[in-house]
Length: 219
Image (cartoon, rainbow, N blue to C red; front, side, top):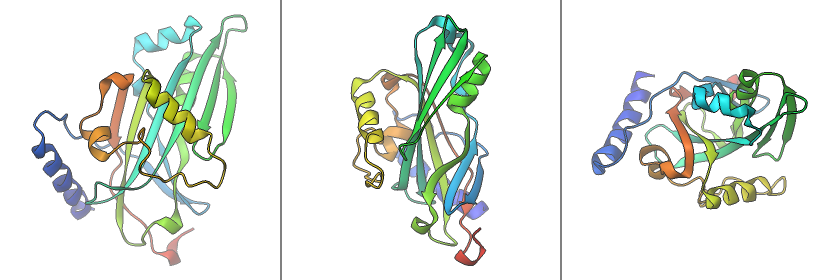
C-alpha cells in the first residue's frame, strides 16, 4: 500500500509542478471499498459539502441540487478507467413541512424519499452507500486503484446541467464510459484546476489506494 500511495503522489506531483497556478492536489479521505454483486462499490460521506448557511436555505422552498462525480484511476495513471455520477435534488414542501429528495444515478435508476429534517435530507443527497463504481470485469486483478470524487452544490453552469441531463437520459445498455463527455472533463480540469464558477461550492478528494483481489478471491 505504501508503494501504491507513493506512485500516486509522484504522478500528481508532476502535474502540479507543471502549472504553478493550479490548486493543490485534493486530500485523501478514507472510503469504504468492497466487491459486491459483481461490482466494485464505494461508501463514503460528503455531508461537509453543505455549510450551515446552505442547511438553513434548504427550508426556503427553492430546490438544492447535489452532483457527485466519481472517477476510477489505476495508480500512476491520470486517465480514468471508468467514471460515473449521482445527482440529487432536494425540495422543501412548505405545506407538508417535509423534504423531498430525488436521487438519480448513471444506471438510470431513480429513487424519491421524504424526510423530516435538513440533516436527513443532506444525508440522503450526499452519502454514498455501496455505490457502484465499476464492473469487476473492467478491473485487473492485483492492480492498484483509487477513486477520485468531486461533489458540486447547485451547479450553475447551464452547459454542465445540460450534460448531466444528457448522460442520465441515455438508454440502459448504452455506453456510459465515454471519456469524451465534457462534463466529466480531464483529470486536470476536475481535480487540479477546477472551475469554481461551475457551482456554488465544490468538494474534491481521493479514496485511499486499494488493490483488486484476484478472480479466485472475489465474492
